[in-house]
Image 1: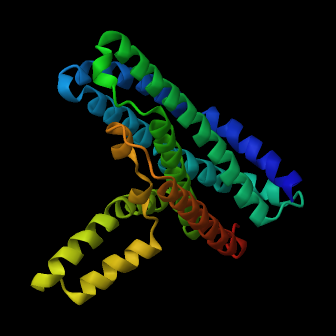
Image 2: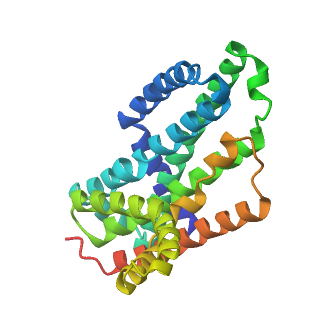
Length: 271
């Protein structure tokens, strides 16, 4: 099975890195690094927090290019150009095709995160040369690295959902809308559940709304649980147990979504 998946992953990776949008990511990273250094200078008391907040937010937001654009473009091109028929005619199963595509897209994501992380650490290094080191006494490098790693897992989870939407619909526009909706829900459901639990005492929230929000929390990926920018920005260590649980959640959720994607794609008409 692996000997079929690996070539698909490599071809997907090569196809992804040829897209011009990756050059835009590199340029955007350079501009954001300069912008972060300039803006953080206006908040001298919180220079470390502002610097890390902007740097880590840039990483997580820029990486959204992969699920929202690259993933959908690659899948839609394969169907429109009948490339998928070439794969399936060479003793490659549909499950191998999905897993191979996912692996290739994940390789692209890893490269993007590597570039963005290097830029972020470079920004931190330059800031330490420009500003007094006393502003960086609470700098926690391991916490920053773990936060970047969990952000990568968050993007991985969102990519698996995007693949599911691509398997469910033949419209790239609809797949994009569903992916954006998944991201918005995944970032906000935990806060909504917390808000509802506080408002229940006043009886303001209807039972139907409560059930809907809690159902969304379990059905959609809880992306906010993989966001650890707060810990890194304030120089706090991320609890190992909490980080481990987040890793297990992201991997398990991605695995289940890929199973659904394979099951749906196996019965999909491609003609």
